[in-house]
Image (cartoon, rainbow over all chains, first blue to last red; front, side):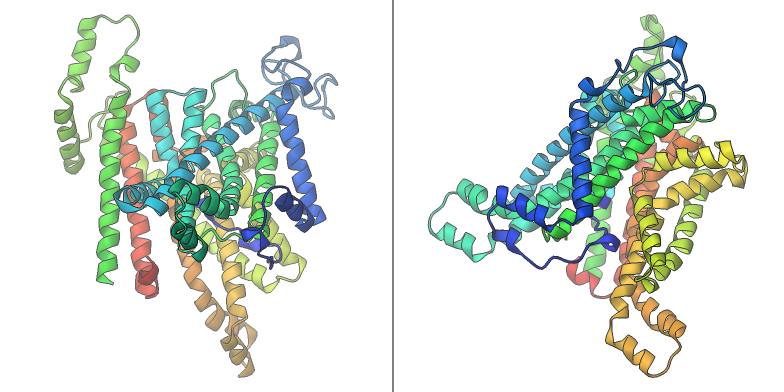
Length: 309
Length: 306
């Protein structure tokens, strides 16, 4: 998971000179500022991403069929525009006559849900441990950083395989695996940020004024490390979509007949020679979502002027 | 310098010890492996015999001792599924993975560096933008999606390449390309940016002012200084590439250690899985250690920050 914090320098837009977000007011003001900063292309990306989120959210309403309903008389129909296509199934059907459009919508929903919950778990876990390591320090902090080093050193795929072999492959296990995938990146960045911020004069002033630890952390340190956390979150999010897809693709994630984008590609692989759309449709969906999140995350890093070092 | 060497080596050693211990206890967490292996309804006598055969009836500390001493003597048990020595299975599979890995490494460096240079020198015209756009897509495309697309095009439409297996060198072409893609993209990006950083330096103006031809300026003065960050990224990516082998081998049915590890996960073949995890982790840890040490030897500034 070392890739998570890696910058994507080649495509970085012009560096942003304003540093207001660091200490400026958050919430509405920051969002409006970000929107003003975005050029039309980035606004298009953001719009598309919001659209995808809405589609995933309302998948049950948008899907024309039950994703697991089989129509054996309409098996292996290609998408509209090819021979033998049926207008009732715009993206075709799979080997059991299940509607590809419905499955893709439900698959998108589940993939996004798993990545979302997983990335929130790793964010909360990583931030908490990073704050402890940076603020409390001592032997506990050293232990946390040792764990971070170990997780960086061992390829995460192996940890995931081991956990799945032990606990079986079910949705809760998959979400847990994905939740522990990105925490070490947060912990490292948050610790470094906390160390920097807690040495700043305004924190020293609050300590001198007699503020409690929780007040210092919540009111003074946390607001100043929100930007890097948000940027890390966008980056982990796309990595987690790929992790979920890879696991489900290998048959180690969500079990059939439940559809996620990855498991659909995995099942479609067997029909690649004769009925390629079964694998291609969800593949395109995965690629589209992960590209979009990467582009937005990359832009956000520059717009919020975050250095993830 | 010596201090850095010792600290870094001890750190790697500690990581390996944690991996070995964690793998052992993790695989025992889920209870008796025999529960999954044997068919339901088997009589208790046979089951007890199987448990005894695999040494699973001994106390945990004794099992751990046998496991650790086994690691050093090369006896890491027998596969529950294949009933053969785990080491023999890995020895059989390792050449394929090493081959795949080396092809991918050579491919990404041999293509990535020139493309990165081209992108830097053409940064203001469409060629440079096109290279960077392709690199970005290569970075963002999941391995298995790229694999599917390539199989569709080169195996099923053009009939040029075999879609799976490892019988001939030709079978390794697509897996190597898929494995190399993310690293290739990273190398292109880092080469471009490192070169752009260097191109604006004063000593390049000096080199041009004294009348050197442009290609000599690039090769002798710019590239040499741009090499350090590029070497770093290659070192960092090697670890990730070992991990990606797992997925790529599974997709293309290359009989290597990655494919073996995935299969062992599905079959809950713990002896195979635990040795695979330790072997791959050890490879990654050693490779990153070697890269770090080499890097510290090339660039003395490293030890200050490390």
